[in-house]
Amino acid sequence: MCTYATFKDTVDGSAKGPGGSWFHVTDVTVYFDHPVHAMAEHTLNIDFADPGRGPAARVAVELTAESAERLVAAIQAALAAVPVEMRV
Amino acid sequence: MTDYPDTSPGSLFATTLAVAGHDGDQIEAYLARPAGERSRGGVVVIHHMPGYDRETKEMVRHFAELGYDAICPNLYSREAPGADPADASAVARSRGGVPDDRLVGDVAGAAAYLRSLPAANGRVGVIGHCSGGRQSVLSACRLDLDAAVDCYGAFVVGEVPAGMDLRITNLIPDLPNLSAPLLGLFGAEDQHPSPEQVAELGRILTEHAKDFEFHSYEGAGHGFFAVNRPAYNVAAANDGWERIAAFFGKHLSTATATATSTSAEG
Image (cartoon, rainbow over all chains, first blue to last red):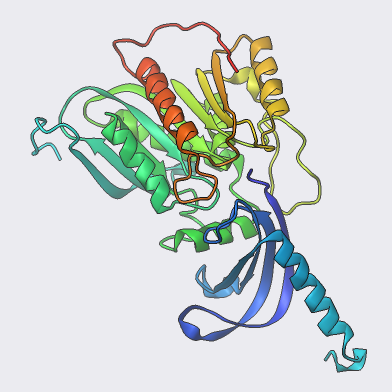
């Protein structure tokens, strides 16, 4: 199916993108839909992008649903492992 | 193009060009034509949400090989001209997807271009897969087309979940205006559209006395035509291509195009 399930937000950070260059990322799009490259019918896809730098300024990942769940848990664990005052 | 002889079966030409789309915007398109001057119909291929990609262009050439002038407009020409198809798709998705009105305008422009070509017989069909399946039905509801093929398009019927950042609606309000015969090809294992939704679409079309023909393939899920995806299903895809060829052969050929009766089968 085309799920069309798409959710957007803003982010503030950097990503290593095309050509091996780092760039500032401002936008994230999260969707569960067909991947371009991963060998699964559907994947949890994340695009980190800076729309101001054009379509190629994008770091994309396509994760199986199960591995995406593990990523979420790992992110939460990493954030929980440090004092709140360090989140600056 | 016309400098080449029409004596070599299978000869065709493919090129990238610009056509006038919605609001007269010049948009990129991929065109494939059979060699020679033999009268032929046209096919507009609507690419799937992942973009104006190599596999979709291969389908365009497939239709030329079948004897049609075929064209695929790049629906993401405006957002990301010249970009990698996957990047262009990501940009379009992040902006909420392709608006329905713009899609219809782009298909109208592509169809008009096909009808303007030398040797065109004036008959134009449309086909799309996945999101393009829904857009194929939409186009046939709003434009003067001669045949439409919907390959597993989701949300032709059914409720769209709330809260998503991608704008989409079902096509129930449009369906009474369907003006072309519709061929629907679905996977029995697909859930979007589910077999129940396919049946509901069939009921609505029957209610409105529309000309349609549905086939659902056991053991096939969504995306069974996609040769580069795990969902590719050889048996379903082979039979589907045969049915598409027969359907367009019936409706896009001047010699054989006649009034048809409503039909439906499982």
